[in-house]
Length: 65
Image 1: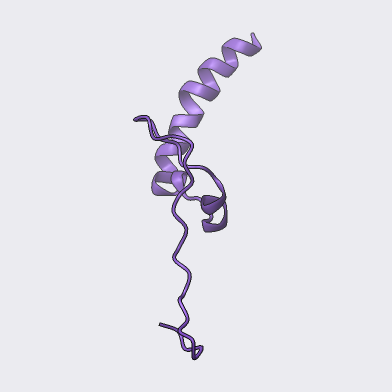
Image 2: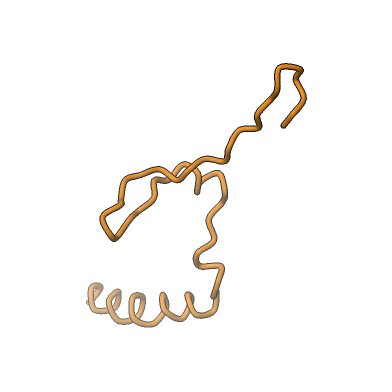
């Protein structure tokens, strides 16, 4: 009975309804966590990390470039 209830009520009704109500917020991810997670490539490019933001370069005088 528990499996039938889980499969019908939770997975077929509650989860899709909640995702529809939340809309864009379903896919929100904090920036710090986004930087830590590896990029999932579904076309053969998986496992690579996302490129980091470029570091600010400094000239010999110490001014930012």
